Image (cartoon, rainbow, N blue to C red; front, top):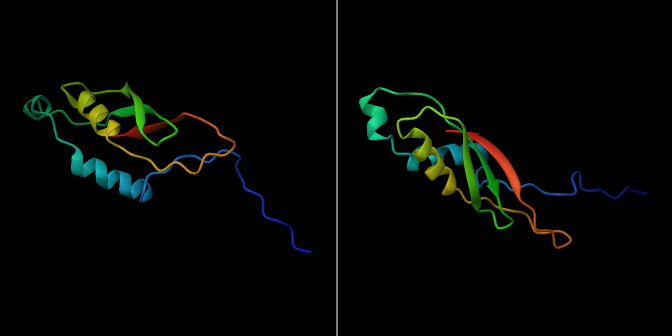
Length: 103
């Protein structure tokens, strides 16, 4: 007799359509380099921690590591535009997921 295949994880995590490559492409297309950062020749990576609600929308974003000159605010703006795909709710759960992304 064949064994029935069980799900590996009880709770399914939200995913971005197109995976990490799709998310990077979206961020690159929407991101606008701040004028103040351009004038002061500021470059770097902003690390953003955010929460995703049960509908796949980013509800809260916070900068963990920032570089200033308007880049932190722009990174939060772009992250709040992301829309994730949340798998079907199991057992009527309303969960919030957390994620960290480099911009």
